[in-house]
Amino acid sequence: MAKSNKKQALGRGLSALLNDSENAIESINDKNADQVIGNIIDLELGKITTNPFQPRTHFNEEALEELSQSIKELGVIQPITVRKKGNAFELISGERRLRASEMAELKTIPAYVRLADDQESLEMALVENIQRQDLDPIEIGLSYQRLIEEIKLTQDQLSSRVGKKRSTITNYMRLLKLDPIIQTGIRDSFITMGHGRALINIESPAEQIKLYKTIVKKGLSVRETEALVRKSKAPKQSSETPYQPAYIQQAADDLEKLFDTAVSVNANSLGRGQLKISFESQEKLQNILNKIKGEA
Figure 1 (cartoon, rainbow, N blue to C red):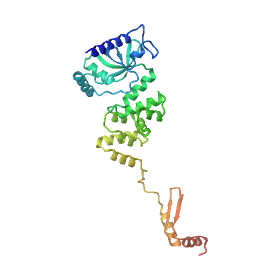
Figure 2: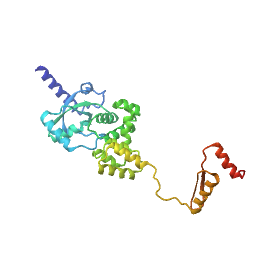
Figure 3: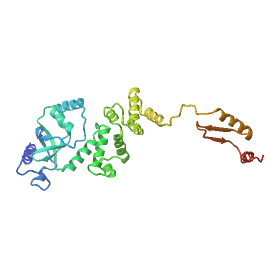
Figure 4: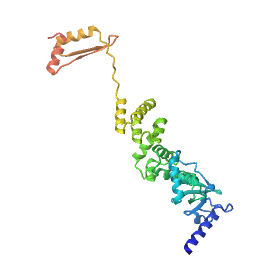
């Protein structure tokens, strides 16, 4: 029982330290910082501001309702992560838990307190969110892109940070090249990441959207989508009958009789064309040449 009282006293001590405006803890070198870093305290929800670096832009309301109900019954099992900023606390990660706790009308939430500058805050928020299973492929791709562009990580460094192969990271980031309509389709689960990866091979945004509509309308599988993309990229054969004046066919017939071999002649409307003479051996070729020279 004494152990429990000691823990509660420690909790109150931390809260007092964190709310002390005269001795604000802003860096690891500040007084009492060692008592704050790495500790979990109950924070008032009203003192927590959301993270401006939050990569997640879409929250499923139904899922939030389910999480809120779970929190009402069991409480917040996994603490959120915050950093001290002035007299308030800024969320680093755990916005779904924070939102669901607000919906559950909780007054406080367990929070893991850290000291982090803006870049660390962004990196922590991005990496933490990437690990979540309910983050959609576009959000993951955006998070990877931000880690590379804003944190200045190389793909090798990023691969080490998030524990993913470089090829996996590349596949997610390539989805951002898709037309925004298709990206929305992936986020709303009309198509999968596999469909999106197939559509990336189409350069024209208009053609991408055309195929996307076909995929959704017909409910095509990823394999069927890949076949559709291959067919779309195949060279289109002209259905027009090539220009062939009467004298062309006559010339081909005459040459076939002269050389005793197959001959094809093609010409355009300007009279320019090609003459193709077939032969099956060196001797046959020599006979054709002799006839051309008038030696046969």
